[in-house]
Length: 286
Image (cartoon, rainbow, N blue to C red; front, side):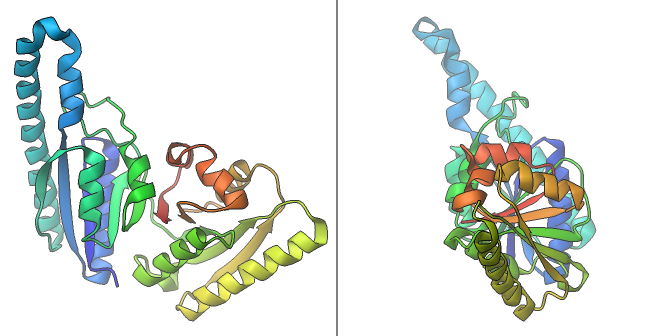
């Protein structure tokens, strides 16, 4: 069951979208929401140390100034977040500002929440709001909870693609999505998609058997509209994203460490590729 949602706050436009999804999900499942604002002390120190050893005194003063600014902006984010949840009538607890390395702080808080919701563009460096970090890439791979990565623009989620390749990671992602049930099952259209390798009829038969078994799992968990699609091989990333675009999917569910074709799709080289290339929300779990 989904009882606690963690939302990571930033000044990017996708934070407001993350908050909107959190409110909708919290209303539906009666969950409480926690807001987390982060002060990247390591990033601030690196930024302030650029002047070199000869200017150490001034670097320390700059570091203090940037840290104070970051904390003030983080507190501002939390106040706005709490006010929005109050207006929506959503329970929220333990909204807080944390100092430290963002990746470590988020992963630690994920241990005590069922779902993390965050924007795909994560900066966590408030004095310089354009400073890009790879925090979300690392969080997806290491965090204990499932992660919903959202885009700038809100979209109602009606059509969901479950990327499935029989790996343990893909199965866990599908199971976690079914277990948490963050969306209304009766109003979802689920499509289980496998990008199969070469191998002719045998590969097709194996692929269809695999996704048929996945369909039976989701059927048993109360999803009322589930279909399956086996896509011939090729570059899995392009094939799956292209299919999502053609079918107007609103969400992709996938494992963070899949094998075979889906591994190429999601992590071709790094998690960053997935978060940057997909133009729709992602539900990720490892």
